[in-house]
Structures are given as structure tokens and as C-alpha cells.
Image: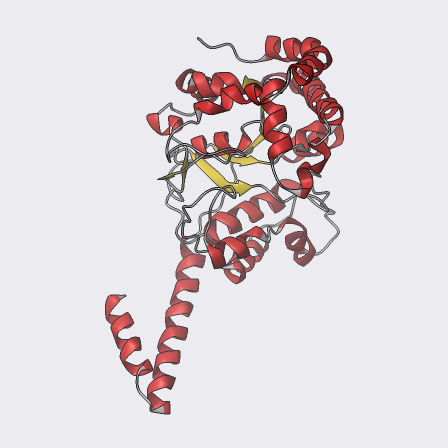
Length: 354
């Protein structure tokens, strides 16, 4: 690679059209080799999805980062945006449709942004990571996977997509080895009964992980976040109504899908990271390792995606437990009266750790 780099630099410096032509041909040949290598090495991914989902600002990004480096996990690095027509809606795939349209529905445009600008998590994050992703290669892997099948099922379409996603992320450090799950975070998707029915139809062996956050700490984070999708949380009563809907959906999902659903406490995740992650490792039948206690992207330490000032990379941000201190007594009273009963019900269903 270094030899080719020096060679192309030398002939690009040449004023000769023949010299520049050689450079372009060398680069084109290198890209063709890269495509062939990518197509040859991309493993078929058929493991189920462990979906992380609940209302925003509840720790979904953090949990994704904690799963990131585990050798038995394919960890989706960003919010999983396969939803259609919105990311909060599980995609309804029609088997009579064309593979081109299946790909269009599932495709996540965020990979283009991350490829061009690098990957970072949160508007306050100063660290950007390389994200080498070839969309045209992803299309080839997707269609090749489907072409290899005698018949296509809903699950196989999603398998094709996951194979194409991770197979086209060329600098993904955890592509090989025996895996048991894909992990991916999509906020609010689990709040819809219909979404969950479609999710478990595609992934009957899938898992749902939901995080309940103390509403007194949740509201300041949600209200402070500057984004259009959080504008509905600027009014405290409207925001807490949404929080309650999220809490009730957790209880319903747990009742309907039983052992396939686990609820954890955000506060436990922060204060007792190792015991919580051990519980999740048991839930997913993966081996516990210290990597599950370190937030990373592609195995590089990450800072928290926070509405406040983030702590150092690779650490769990304990300051998130004191957000309630930014609220007035009146606001705290409103939250307590509106959420006390539902919060306790969800905590009763959550994993208990010491």
C-alpha cells in the first residue's frame, strides 16, 4: 500500500498526461481489488437482532457503546435507522416487491455522512472516527445474498441487509468470529404494539432491551437537547405524558413477549455497570467480559452522548444521576405526581442488581 501511495504521488506530480493516466488506472485497479476482496470476505449474517428501544435520552446510545466491542456481537454503531417511512416505524416489507425496493426501504443514509465526515456521537463530542463504508459494495452484497437463495423470506431480506451493512463497513474491527446477536438502538420503536408484532415476526428469536430512566433525571436531558425531534419535550406536562406512555409500553411488551424482553434501570446501568451488563450477557447467552463495561466505537473509547458536558472517553458518565438538581421544586412535584405509580410498576419488572 505504501509503495502504491508513493508511486501515485510521483506520477500525479508529473505534468505528462500519460503519467496522470497511469495514476488513475492504478487507483481504479486498487478500488476493483477492494471490491473483489469485500465481496469475497463479507460473511453471511443470520443471527437475530437484540433491539434496544425506549423513549429518547434514556441510555440507548450508552448501552450500544457498551456492547460495541464484544466478540460475540455485531454492534450497529449508530441509531438503527431501517425504519420506514420514519425510523420509529418498523419497515413493512412486501415479499412481492423488488429487491431494489427492499434495499431502498432498509438503506440507512447516515452511512454516507459518516463516510464523508467521520463518525462521532453527540454534538458535544470532539473526537471523530474513521468510518470506511462503500454503498455500492453494500448493494452488491445485498443482491448477491438474495441471489444465493432458493426462496426469499422476510427474515432472509433482513439477513441480507445486515450482511451487506457489516460487510461494507471496511474498517469494522469485529467482523469475524462466532456471533450470537446483532445489537442496535432505535428510540421509541418499542412504544408501538404494531412495531413489536412486526419485529418479532421477523425475529422470533430476537430480543428487546428497554431502559427505564428516573423521570426526574430524564426530563432535564430531553428538554435540553437541541433537536427538532425533541421539541415536544419542551413542555413538562406533555413530555411526562410521553414518558408515561413509554413506561406503560414496557409493561405491555414484557407481558406479551415474556422471556424475550428485559427491562433495566438507567440508574443501575450507571451506578452498577458490571452487574447490569452481566445480567444482559446472561440474557443474550454471551460470555461476560470487561469490554462490556467500557463504552466504545469500533473498540475505540467513546464519550457519552449527553445534553450536558461529557466526561472523559471510555467512562460511564455518573453526572447523569444528578440532572434533577437543575429542576425547580414545582417541576419536581409535577413529575412525581404524574409518574410515581408507573415508575414503580416498571421498576418492579426491571432486573434487580446490587
